[in-house]
Length: 340
Image 1 (cartoon, rainbow, N blue to C red):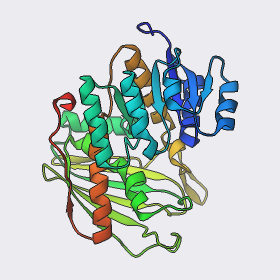
Image 2: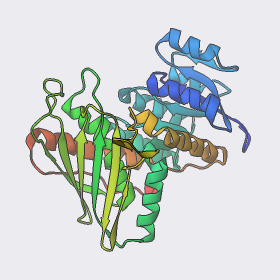
Image 3: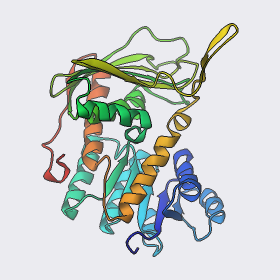
Image 4: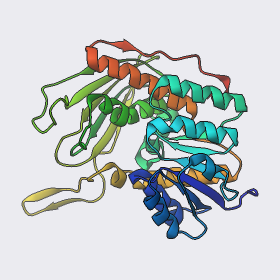
């Protein structure tokens, strides 16, 4: 690819998230095209490729990466398949946008981290899309400027209307709270040092065996405390909010989205039904920023270190969830490649 030319992207994994990224690259953002789609479901990739001029369907990620029209890779396959796809991309020195998780556990994430370090430069942006949400970007700017003084605490809410079949307690950490893990590290610019999980009386709407809601507590290396109310079967919609409590004031995002009305016998507004609707603009902005940076020959955004750190906190969180104890987070020393 010549500098600033159209970026040919191979989308690996074409389920709900991958298909949405195919649509996004083809119809929404600029500077890129879908050059290949990859999935073990041949009917799915053949159908997607047929609707996009110049797009080739594949069932093997490595074969798609060898396509001469592919300049970069977007990985949206299930988490256990990420490591192999990332290593294949590294072998070809291809830039990657990898949906979270980087990998499902810290051991495999560490292998990816070490493989990228051997390249001597970053190749991966991890898809923690909340960093590209307009509200979170505003809150991050306020905290970085010290507008309200030093941040002391964060209060998070994370609510889903319901959970899909087979959703487990461990998935409440790996699939849901992982977002609060990343935004905590990003907003406060600190590592999470310890985790506790409290289990209130469960809702009757939760499936058998799922403890819902839960209260997750983080302690950062600097001594800040972060709480997250996680309620994934609330029954009424999707809500995400964050309040930063600082020495000189507070700042909160996520409470009032869209139009808020007052009318006869009624007040209020709409609640988004799911995460894609709530964060659609953030996903668009994330992929556009990745494409723009890649075309410039740069890598920005959440790194393999962020993916590894999130996996380590998730591991501690699952143990805290199972034991009810405070669990410390085990992290290696941050490599120079990922220094802030």
